[in-house]
Amino acid sequence: MSVLKNWDINLRQSEKKTLLSFFILYLFFTTLLLLFMAIFYYNTQKDLMLKDKRVGLSKYANDEIKRLKYLHVNFDRVPRIYPRDKRFKSAIYDSVYTKIFSLLDSSDVDLNEDIYLKDGSIYYIKELESYYLGTKYVVIEVKDDGIWLKRVYKNLAIYGGGILAVLLLMGYFLLYLLLRPMREAIELLDRFIKDTTHELNTPVSTILSNIELSSKEQIDEKLQKRLNRIKIGARTISNLYQDLVFLTLSQKIESKKQNEDIAELLQERLEYFSLSIESKKITLKSKLSKGISLHVDKKKLTKLIDNLISNAIKYNKINGTIDVVLAEKYFYIKDSGRGIEKDKLDLIFKRYERADRSVGGFGIGLSIVSKIAQEEGLRVEIDSVFKKYTTVKVSW
Image (cartoon, rainbow, N blue to C red; front, top):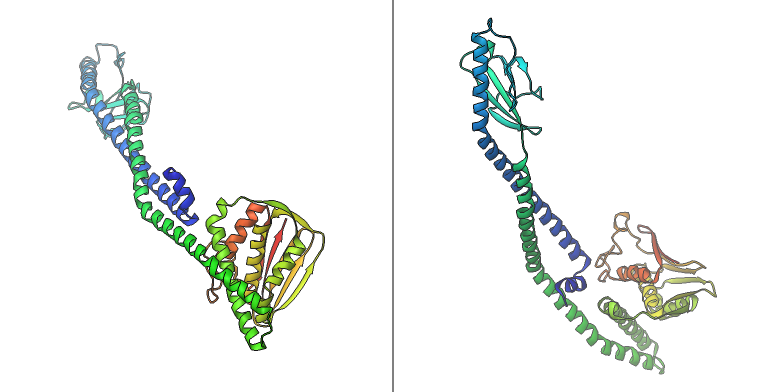
């Protein structure tokens, strides 16, 4: 099995988010590094190109200065026409940067630079020692042929792409090394849970079956109460066992859907939890409409209902109430317990999250409810007021 497939199976949602966050951060800094390298390479190549062009542009500037000198010396004897050259365009400025005459395409020239590239043209500025025709600066403009830029883009595509591939490959192996201990820990935990659940099944089943047999015998009331408490404890362990089995093996269990009578199923599960309800002196009120069926997997829906009833008992108060109502398009279970604070409502479906840590549990019940609801096409809604009630509505 491939590494990616192993990750998909073993990593929990939080680990996947951590992996995604690390990858985005790594990709961001990798891109930032490549961008910095690309800018540095571009500027270096541009400077080399300007250095190569400087000699030729300096010659052009000297030729232009000679023409200006000739025009200055023979100002009254020759036509007063600004000298032009097919090889370049030029302009002249005085000592306070005022333009005297210009043939340039750009009117914005930086006279503080000696050579620079702007808008596809190269500008070379030469400062004169003698002020011919009042000129202090000669500016030479030539079009950039763009050959160097094409070479830069080509090299960036080839070498930049290669560097990016290497960095991504390094990132992949870095992630692999970082996640290996986590993956091994998760695999170890999965094996432990599977082994534990397997070992739990036999003793729990034995305890429950013997309690059932003992309950049929004529025993005194005190012993019966003790047996009932043992039975409640054993069923609690049994429910936890079933939850662990579902978490570890749900992806391997084939779903078997058929039409199920929801009223019968709810009544059956309420009877299963009757001892727990009685032990907490909870008043149960049920209103189950008949003739309502769903095409679902019975085992999964049973697990969903069991977790909702178990929570309604666990988080309820002594002498509290539980209302179970089944209508045509939904059923709900309402308890008069602790309720859930508003800021925790968005977290309760996450695995290992618990709204109330004063009560035992691993925080997996509602996570299982959410998972089963998604698989069976059901919708789960929770309405709760802190310290008053909680209502869980399952609709279809």
